[in-house]
Length: 118
Image: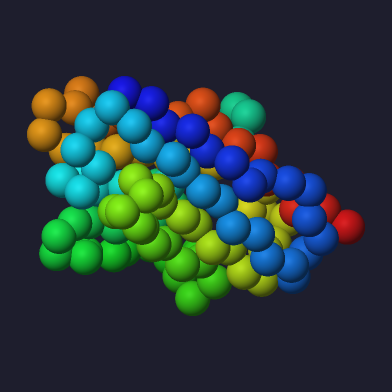
C-alpha cells in the first residue's frame, strides 16, 4: 500500500493550491479518502473526508467554504483544492485512506508541506 502526496508549496495569503494524493496497493474505490494536517508540537487534525460510493463529504469548520475535496477513482487519486489560504493553514498535509482491511487509523502518506506566508 502506498499513498503519495504532492503539490505542497510556499504561497502568499489569499492564494490557492491543490494537493494530490496518488494511491496504490488497495481497492481505491472502496476506501474513504481523508486529508489531515499537522503543525510541529500539535496533534494531527482532520481537514476533510470524501466517501465512496455514497460521496459523503465533510470538512473541519475552519476550512469549510474554502477547501474542496474530490477524488478520481479511474486514476486512484484524491485531491484537496485549497482557496483563500491563510497563514493558519500552514502545516504538513497528509493523505489518509480508511476501508476494508486497513489499520484502525488507516493508511498514511508521507506528507507534503504547505506554507502560507507573505
